Amino acid sequence: MEYRTRKIVKPSDLNPMNALFGGRLLAWVDEECVIYCGCQLQHTRLVTKFMSEINFVSAAHQSDVVEIGVETVSVGRTSITVRCEVRNRDTQSTILSIEKVVFVALDAKGKPTVHKLAKLEHDQRKRGWAGAGFLGRLAGRGEPANAAKA
Ligand SMILES: CC(C)(COP(=O)(O)OP(=O)(O)OC[C@H]1O[C@@H](n2cnc3c(N)ncnc32)[C@H](O)[C@@H]1OP(=O)(O)O)[C@@H](O)C(=O)NCCC(=O)NCCS
Image 1 (cartoon, rainbow, N blue to C red):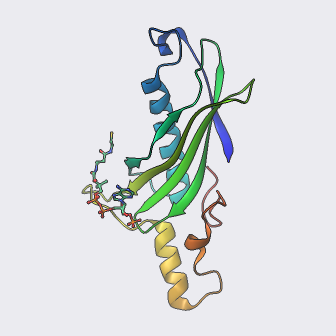
Image 2: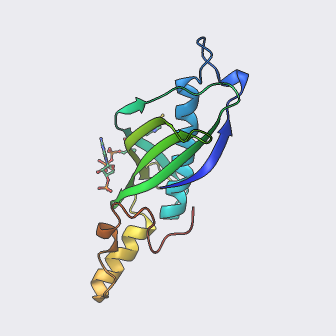
């Protein structure tokens, strides 16, 4: 998993217990995941479809720097599933983990649409190319071979 984004916890990010507000952290996570998925799929119109159990493992406090990591779990025809972890930069302790966040690629009318990677896979299969089937091999690798760098 690569941790690409860092955030500093400011007074306006705190809950009444003086810890990082969960909703603020989820907004950061959602934003980071959608940027990552957009890069992977080379598709800008994506919506969050599903989030699995969210585990707030430990608290973050004012002035802490948190790092947000995302990796690909699987890629479908219109969707991509990623895993996300947030950790404290200095202690490296986990603050949050989510096993599955699903984003769906939409067309201009807001309907699910087959994204470029799935189209590429389909074309490769049709032509009988050796690389065909790469979508199925992405799980756990984190970096689709044909995707732009996030
Ligand atoms: C996203 C949306 C257009 C999808 O509509 P839908 O009728 O569920 O679409 P489909 O059934 O065709 O599924 C689309 C993809 O999502 C996946 N999917 C749907 N429900 C899922 C779920 N509960 N968990 C995991 N994946 C799911 C499907 O497997 C499919 O992926 P694939 O094509 O890669 O196999 C619709 O649910 C929607 O508009 N939701 C609101 C999104 C939103 O506003 N998000 C912001 C929330 S604050």
